[in-house]
Image 1 (cartoon, rainbow, N blue to C red):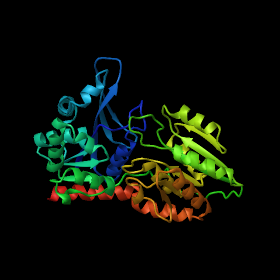
Image 2: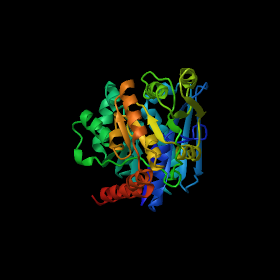
Image 3: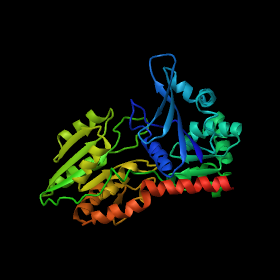
Image 4: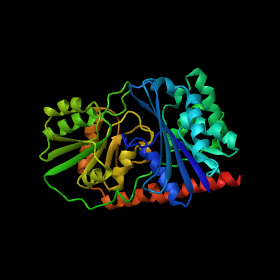
Length: 384
């Protein structure tokens, strides 16, 4: 079976963690014995008017990856020109990939713009296409008069739609009422269970260690809300005889703002910046409770990574997070300081079975399990 894997979200040398969850799916498919070729079209902001680079390589997992990188000061304009993007993708496909690699299935990631390009290419090649959906901004895009009809058509003509959570599935169904519900199959994101492993936690009677991971960035519509657990920890530390330590992992232009916010708080805070997965795992192995305050969450991969290490999670009761968190592995709370204070206080007093947390989550979200689910979708599409 040959699968052409199309995405506009994918890691590059300059952005090694961008779209890493898409690459994880590609790796899972490869491990199922599928002949997979990854084709990326990536738009980058630059000072140049226009520059196109094509990078063709075999990645560390043996997957041939062809990246079309378009750098331009007009990046935001090109983003809303899907047919412009498709022209470059189609040309690269026929010049560099076809006919030595003719796919049986096209697997696109995110309806805009990968799904739109997959639909057009599938019509040319006369092969089915499916869409894995990671995106929570469908409602916003459907307000664009020109794009909305194209997006609806792309969903409706696909063979399968694979949202990464029930929350995202419901969001799409609400917006695209004419799409057949039997096309949907929820297949979640993947955590690398060879990296995010369980390790017994050292019990400390005098210290409680907390950890949070995110891109701490200023946005027009913020999605992370660390102020909530920072203030909650400050309140609880003042009446606790234990030492609180918070480690914040991740980069972004909010770092200085958050550092200043933590300066006069009553607990210790460390900002570690960007860390590799291997470094994050080491930190999680010494963490007692993982904190994740969010205003929206399509999946919640950082919370899942914490669970893989056996670390209980306290997080916002939003988006897809309730699909991951229950009484045995953490606490859901509302986005108020009062709710976060109660949740952290309860989490500190709760004795969690860390090994059981890790074992239960491995059964659902391991690479092999997700790879098998995607393989079953491929087989059902081809047989039908």
